Image 1 (cartoon, protein in one colour):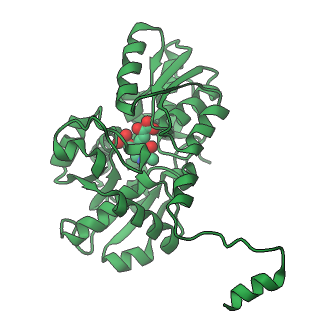
Image 2: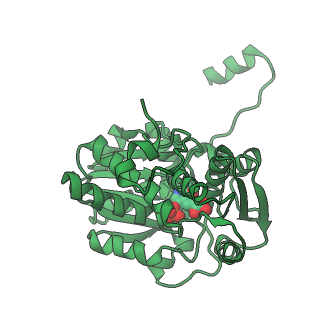
Image 3: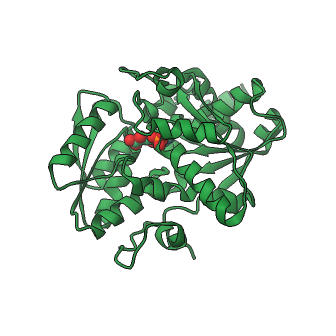
Length: 348
Ligand SMILES: Cc1ncc(COP(=O)(O)O)c(/C=C/C(=O)C(=O)O)c1O
């Protein structure tokens, strides 16, 4: 049975005899084929449903590695800035590892489910009147002054853990896909996937995909090649204007003959609803930037018909219930507790 990433992929990871084999059974997430969207779009489209991870996002992959190494090195406290999922994962793995977790989040811009997780896992939470980029700068400075381990994706152990998703995609598909579509915020995940595909190809000749990363238009620093001081998008997970792994994301796109592109909030929301209502897969808005991007680039011809495409769904839709209800034209019809009243509606 599945033993978690540190054991399953030990040979690819910086796991030593001293590394605590921390796990919440992260990884081994489904790769789901989408028959209707594949038909509609003219490609072979699969989604990597990272929302199935223990805390509901891909962050668990990197966090299990980073927290385990922090403990191995004798640290008793981890800290991160977060738009929400990093902090949820850090708080969970810190609790599991009997360590303290301190998080800094942008006040009022964190999806409710993610705040619920940080609260319940027992993190020390600071909500600053600033954005993620400002929070990250602050946390990097603090971790340089205090004996606290920084676990944002500038911590290389995060990238090591997250690259395992590329291994699973290759194992599940039997090969690397032609295209890997992925949302881009701080750009750690696109960096990790590319590293993973290259390492897995070196050992198993599985091939290399085009890396196609998608920023939200209101936070598209890489696309515009400038820091976005006031990033804005409904996809709060990727409301990031100065990606920490900016150059690595550009390298991944260039080396793989891929591209860093942008999608608008309407395109994200349209993909968000299409995916759930057509294929029964509910992913949070930022995750659907990958689906919106695939639709955009099939239309432009950048993604060829018949391509084998994997879109990464980075977070569970349940993370952001407010956006789901607020942005939906489908509303409950409130009725008296009366069977005839309902029957009357059904007979419409
Ligand atoms: C659902 C979801 N989808 C995509 C991204 C972008 O990944 P990166 O490009 O590796 O940053 C995030 C990132 C979240 C944070 O950065 C955080 O939690 O602080 C996310 O939560």
